[in-house]
Length: 77
Image 1 (spheres, rainbow, N blue to C red):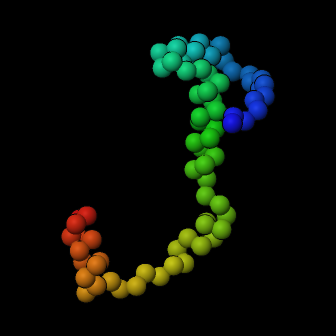
Image 2 (spheres, rainbow, N blue to C red):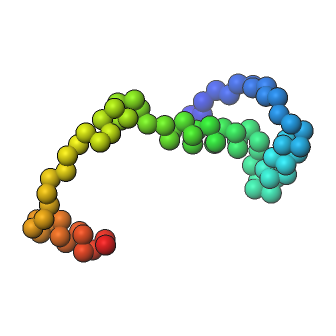
């Protein structure tokens, strides 16, 4: 089930619109789809405030000698 769409008016330089339409045509998409995808991408990349607040507060245990850690370290190093 797709979400309801709504109209949005933007003021953009003509040259930008022209290049965007050409790009969209080459990639078989639309400016609307490109805009929507970019807005989705950048807004999903934002971290919630709680993540920002907790950043750097976790203390890692010393894993030296842990056979699982040593195996993974060797496997992915």
